Every structure is written in structure tokens, then in C-alpha cells.
Amino acid sequence: MLPRLTSLLLFTVLTSWLHAEVTLDPWSYTEQEIYPSAIISTATVDWNGDDQDAEDKKTADDPKPKKTDIPIYGDENGWLAVDLAGLPKNADVTVTISIDGYLKPSTWKGKVTRITKAGEARILPKAIWDYEALLKVRQQRPVNVTFKATVNGIDIPESTETYVMRSLNDCMFYVLMDEEGEDFDDFSWLFAAYVNENHPEVDMILKEALKSGIVSDFSGYQSEEPKDVMMQVFAVWNALQRRGIKYSDVSHTTPSKSVVCQTVRFLDDSVKATQANCVDGSVLMASVLSKIGITSYLVMVPGHCFLAFDLGDGEDAKRIGLETTMLGNDEIRSVEEIANLTEKAKLTDFKASYKTFTSAVKIGNASLKEYKDQLEDDSEDADPDIQLISIPDARELGIMPIATSKDK
Image 1: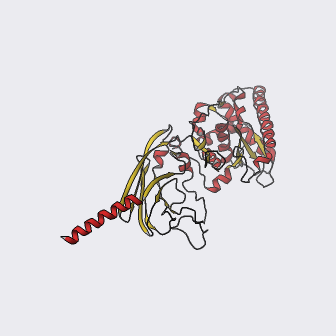
Image 2: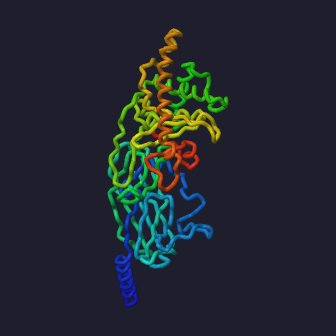
Image 3: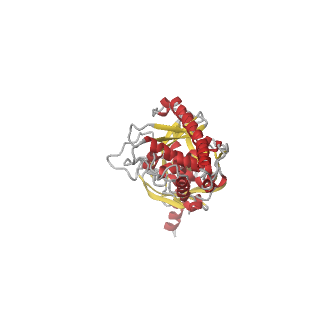
């Protein structure tokens, strides 16, 4: 019996020592908020490319970390993690994170070979998100996030915290890394996820645009004539005007302490409601233009967004601005009504639309000229509120359109 009592006593002492020394702290890139739009649109994005930051994936060619850096293990692209402190060397660690209804229990298991002097390490399990559930979040709500860990087979007291699950319509602009807002990570290119060239409604809009007779086909840059590109853009503009799309300055977003974000309507929401704010209208136009192969941009300036597009597919192609908030400036007839008009009435109808279109181009070009230097500034001191978001570049990075449940 003595050896058994001795073993039991030793286990009790070891358990008490671990509980007293090893601590668990939850970690989230966006603090106590979760942004479904960011998680979905970046699901296949590898921020570091071929480089690996995670200790359990490093090779001899990967950058060497600083001694003061907390070593990380697991998924370096993860949004949620556990910070452990007081770890013994070469500890066998298991970490599990879960969110009821949204994140299935996601586990990392392995040996922690490198720690700081304080025994610190950050563990990011590969998250098993329920993407279908995330796609349905249209209003923010509280969720319970559970963080668990074992060290050398012994359970560390788990932690459950209440986070806010943000709406799918909330798009991150940038994440503040300090309270003063001087240090931040730019996420403005996430707006490209709301541009959806694959949405079935895009084909309907193009079909209606062809019915107007402004252009005979949508060939993108094939003709190599800038005027042909301009007329294709006008045909799309005219079709959206005939849909009755009006400007609506509805962009209120619930404030966040750590994330600057903007509410964005999805394409089908804007079409159904026949209203769009500056971002919504630009996203809508960019979706259709991207479908026909015209390079499009979302131009972010302080308090505003407008569209830009290239007149050609070369590097030196002229860039045109378009103030999409002017879409609703005309009361013109629907596509179905055009067929019953006389040629004179049709011409009058088109003239009104084209006049507004040219005015929108003039204003858009003036804005491009005003912010030209800032839009071309890619230095660390660049103004985060002034951004040129290239839809093709975002796609190349891996930012895919968010296909909502309504798209199916």
C-alpha cells in the first residue's frame, strides 16, 4: 500500500504545482469580438506565404524570432488562441477552443519546445468553423467561448468568456493595436469580399442592360477601345438606374473599441431594397463590372467610398472615377417600359441618364485627383482612411466573395 500512497501523494503535489504555476489566458486578434465576414473571406488566405511563424512548422529557412517574442504554435493564421505562462520545458500540451453553434471543438496537441523565460507560449488550434452558421449571422449576439488546456496530461483550469458575434454585414477596416490608434493593422481590402461577380443577380442586370440597346454585348477590353469600355460601364449604370436604386445614407455600425468597421449591404440586399449607401453602390457596380472583365476598385476616402475602373487592361491604362451615390438622381423608366416608347422618348430618357453618368464621372475623377498622392502612398505612414482597393489584387491575395445563404 505504501508505494500506492506515495504515488498518489506525488500526483497530488504535481497537480497542485502545475495549477499554481501554469496559467491560461484567452487571446483573440479582435479582442472580445468575432467578425464572420473576415473569417469567411480569409478562410484560404495564408498571410505569410511560404514563411512559417509557428514553431511546430518552422524550417531552417524560416525567419528567426526575437528572444522577446512569444513563440506561437499551431495555425499562424488563426483568430483565437490560448496564452500559456509558467510552462516547463518540452511540455506536452493540448489546447481546445470551442464556441457553441459556431466553432466545433478545435484542438492543437504537441510538444512545446521553445518558450520565453517566463515559460510563455501562444497556441492557435486550427479552427473548425461552422461556416453555414456564420453566414446566417445578420445581427450581433453574445456567444460563449470556451478555452481549455492540459499540460503533461494535467488539466489547467479552463476559461469561458462571453464574446460578441458581429453581423456578417460588419466589415473590418482596420484593427487598432494600441489605445491611441497610432498602431493598427489594415484590413480595408476585406471590402472586396462584398463584391460578388458570381452572384446570379449580376447576370440579370447584364441581361437588362443589353435590352436597353446601349451596347450589343459586354466584351470587356476585347475591342481595345476606351470609348467601348466607357459605354459598357454606362450600360450597367443605366440598368441599375432603371432598377430604381436610390442613395440611402444608412451605414450605422455598432461601435467597437478595437476595430474600425463599416456596415455593408450585400448585392441582393441593395437590389431588393432598391437603396444603397456609398459603399453599397460601389460594391454593386464593381460586382457587375468584374463579371465582364473590367478592372474595378473601391476608393476609400475619409467618410466616403466611390468606384474607379480602368479603361484598358495595361499597366498604363487610364483610371476613371465614378461617384455611385448619384445613381438615384434620375427618375427613368424601367427596362420593360422602354419597348413601348417612341425613338424620341427613348433618346430623351437615355440623355438624362447619360448626363448624370458624365457628372458622376467628373466628380469621381476630381476625387481621384484630389487624393492622388495619398492613394499611391504605400508607406507605413500612409493614411488608413485613404485606400485604393483593387478587386483583382484582393482576389489574388485570396479574398473571395462572400456567398450568402440567399445566393443559393
